[in-house]
Image (cartoon, rainbow, N blue to C red; front, side):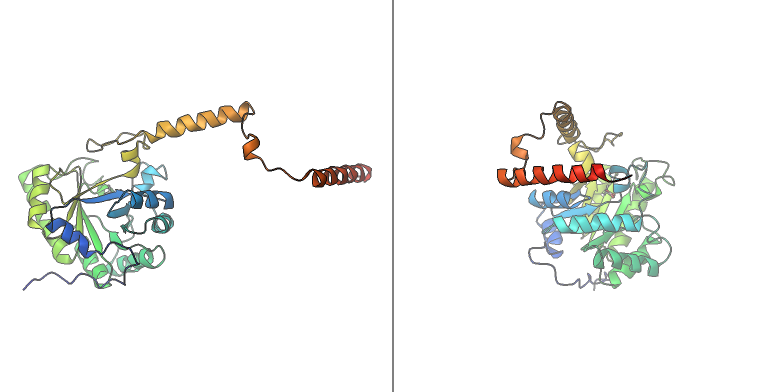
Length: 305
Ligand code: KIV
C-alpha cells in the first residue's frame, strides 16, 4: 500500500482549466510539460495562448519586475498582487504562486495561512515552496489544507547565500544522493510536482525516473518531465547577467527600446498625435464653445485679484 498522502481534493476547477491529474498523465505519456513564469495579466494571457500547461508566478519577480538583486525581498503583498493579475489572464494553465521568503519558514500554521491567501485572494491553483528539511512538514500541512504544492530543489534562490551563491547543486555523489533523498521525501510529503534548478542532467534524469510526480527542470537537462524558463530571460527583457541554462527566444528589450525611441522622436517633432488619433467636434458646437470661452476669459480678466 502506498504511503503517499492523497492529492488534495482541490475545489472544482474553473471551466477550461487544465486538471491537475493531467500532469501525471503527461509524464506517463512522456509528453514534456511546459511551464513559464509570468507576473501580470497580459503575461498570463500570452502564456495561455502559447499553450503553456503551468504558469509560475515566481518570486523571481523581485529581480525581474521589482528591481532587487535577489528574490529574498519579495513580500507576500507584492506576490499576491502579481498572482491576482496573472490569474486574470491565464485561464487554462494551472497558476502556481511562489511562496516568498519568510511566508513559510516560521511554522506550519503560518505557511498554511499564507498559502490560503494565495488561493482565496489571488486565485492561485497551487503554491511552490523551496527546499526540503523543515519544508517537508510545511508541504504536509498545506496539502492537508487542500492546496496542491510544487516543491523546488537544487539551486533554491531564497537560500542562495547558504548555498554559496547562484551555482549548480548536486555535483558530488554525496550531494546528488542528498538531493535524491530530498526529492523522494517531497514526493512522500504530497507534492504534485518538483522543480529541479541547476542540477547536473544525469542526476535530474535519475530523480525524474524515480519519482512518480513530474519534475520540471531549469538548468537540469532534457530528461526532466517538463521545463520552465523565466519570462524576462526567455524574451530578452532581463538585461542583467543570466545563467548558463537560459535560452533567449527573442530580444524584446530591443523591440521596446526601438518603439519608445520612435515615439519620443515623434512627440518632439510633433508628428504624434496625428489626425487619426484626435477627436473632432461639430463645427457649431466648437463655435459656441469658443464664444463662451472668450466671454469667460473676459470675466476672469475683470475679476479683482
Ligand atoms: O522564482 C522563479 O521564477 C522560480 C523559477 C526559476 C523556477 O522559482
